[in-house]
Image (cartoon, rainbow, N blue to C red; front, side, top):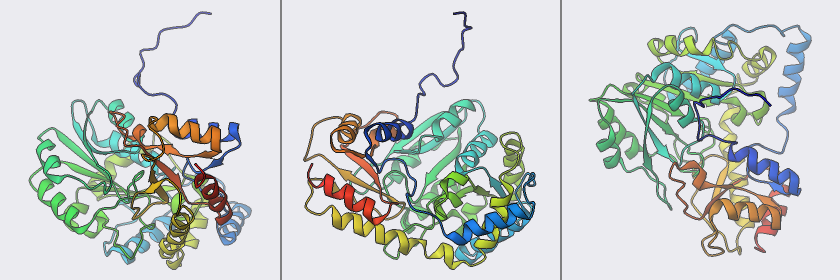
Length: 383
């Protein structure tokens, strides 16, 4: 059959590990603790609100930056939590999920031969977007068991070519989070540079043990050079709705929206109206940490007595586990073996490193019903 040659812009990119492991879980009828989505329903009130706005006829295009009523609700929530006022008109943009926001942010800022510093293991959408924009990736690796950032190493790598530093806290996939000393180190590094910060904070409301989420929004000097990305999919248990947003100063938002308008233009209208009304009660968001900490603690309790060794998780809805005492298999092979032979699906951490660094660690999602976690842990204790 005739076909033309395509010189791929992403020759090393294949099907994501999330798609692979979820497909394998379906094929093997395994418990899916791999891809990060809840297996329980969102608040029925939220569904009622979506239905209300659909029936009211709110089903046409929303404005390109998002409905003003939602941007105002976001501004109120952010100010209450972090003390920074973002202008809903010029500094907040609603997007079709956090991944779209990340792509638009990178595309808006990164040009040919710019360097972008990422922290690995890194969420898999960062590098392709950098490469499509002609940028070069510079990476700093996190090491188990604490997965803390070596800021001395970061300082050596930041140069005149560094356009962007991408941070993710709470961090997917490790569950670690930035501390006050991390912020102070970051401030010292960027104060004499011209680089921007892209802060992926989609798990900002899921942080445990009374810890503070150190959003870039808390620090005026950092906020002035930062694009902050978040997601209602994570906060409201509605990952399939794909509602995210970007906070950034006006001069950055102007460039961000230039890209956003040609990627999705606007985001689902009735969902925006519903979320805007729903989050007027800030406690519906602020109580999320306690909700997920109970699930983390339950999963850890259920896993006691297993041969897996938990790695400390201070945020997100993922728990990493070392299987070093169980097998010498590479983590990708062990994850597939675990799915096929024991019917529990997970995500291997090596796929989040460019070097495919293998620390014999798997990521399990505990955003599940108690019965799901109990069934999965009962199986895993027998491995």
